[in-house]
Amino acid sequence: MFNKIPRSHLLAFLTVFIWAFAYVGTRVAVKFIGSLELGFMRNLVAALFFLIFLLLTKTRLVPPLRDWPLFALSGLSGYALYLILFNIGMETLSAATSCILVAIAPLISAFLASLVFKEKLNGLAWLALLISLSGVATLSLWGGVLTINAGVFWTLASSLCLGGYNVVQRYFSRRELTGKKTFTHYSSVQITAYSFFAAALLSLPLAPDSFEQFAQINFTQQSIVVLLGIFPSAVAYLCWSKALSIAVSTSSVTNYMFLTPFLTLLLGMALIAEQPNAGLLAGGALILGGLGLFSIARRR
Image (cartoon, rainbow, N blue to C red; front, side):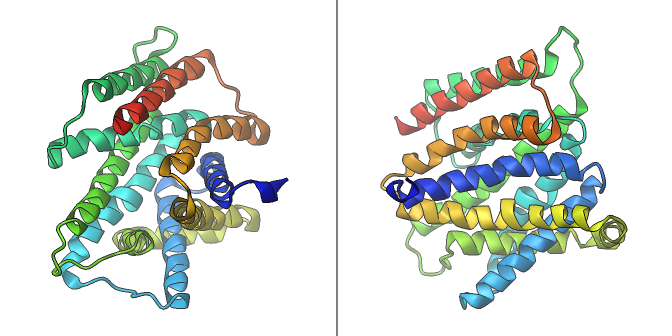
């Protein structure tokens, strides 16, 4: 049966499944290791994975000095700071809620790009943004209590960081279009690898406490931390890049991203007995509806 399914679809589904599992795994991990320390360990493990990958593929290990500030910004926004804020949010949010909130990162990216690159958003895109924001408000204030769960704040902050990371990636792609030979061409794998190297270096002040906490937890818990560093960041990204490179169309792959919240919800219910409430379902429907509308607006 599986041999009849295009390989790009199998890789795309494998990627979103790993991403969904990451939310559940992080929800478990923050109960036995600190959020800051978990962020450092994930960055370190992913950086080591990509170091080995670049060595095996005989790819350049260090970018030119002139691009170090860009990769420092990329690593800080996309991994070092993002993972810390994300982990703190996961301390009080369910896996599904966190996943849905992070899913608005493409909308944040588009808004930031409109400010940085003067890229115009059409009316449909603005409507999609408003619908998703109303979903965030619904999810946060369900039940008539005018207080916002601190986890929502931290997770939205992590989405903002992810949006900034995407803008940096957009800069890399835009400068490629200029055709100037002064710019070094980077593959998507190189950009990710160098960003993880930068994230690990920027997180080094957390190393002593991180290694101390890691040594104190049991083998099963250590395995969860290591797997979170290898699969959601490194392996999933390589699968995603390969799926995009062999797909008939980009949308046939990227459409699988809409499955992530639903897979996260199912895995959360099955593995850690998380039960969705009406606020999550209502707010999540608005957010995902806004994302779907934004996808239509972007194609137009």
